[in-house]
Length: 187
Image (tube, rainbow, N blue to C red; front, side, top):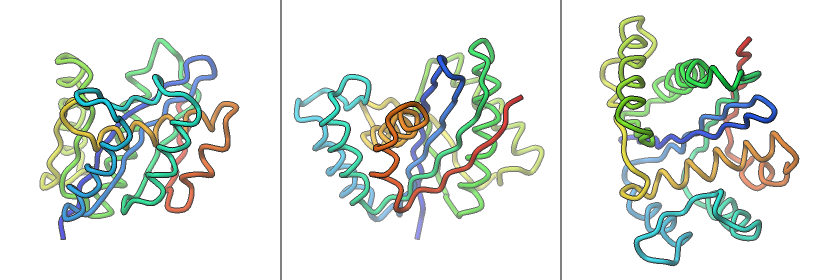
């Protein structure tokens, strides 16, 4: 059995919360989960993105993920200084990648941000490996959400938890059955 994880982030600068979310799944379930996630965006050639959706579409997305054979894992970092988001990302990424590696995930796909930020991620991950936090056997790379629908699933988890950290706690309830949630202090 081979395990995969897809990762996305959400930042709440107004109240200083950084959420890094992963959906982990058995590689054998990859295509069926991709097909299910693709159903969230009925317009061909478009990607699902939480911020572009109405409340009812967000609820449908969270309910769909709750039914799929995925394990949602989130790291919530706070407080975040808006000027130090990369620091928050590093700390949350360390916790998340350690958790995924410990759980036996073989491959991690992070949502691409831009070439400079992606290179920064890989440099930081290299440092984690040198310190023994992540084994060299875990493959880690980046992909575009337009090319990898499983990143949409990570977006749903990240945004649902981010919203729940604000004033919309109902989203957490929709995905909480299998949710692993880690909290870290960033001050």
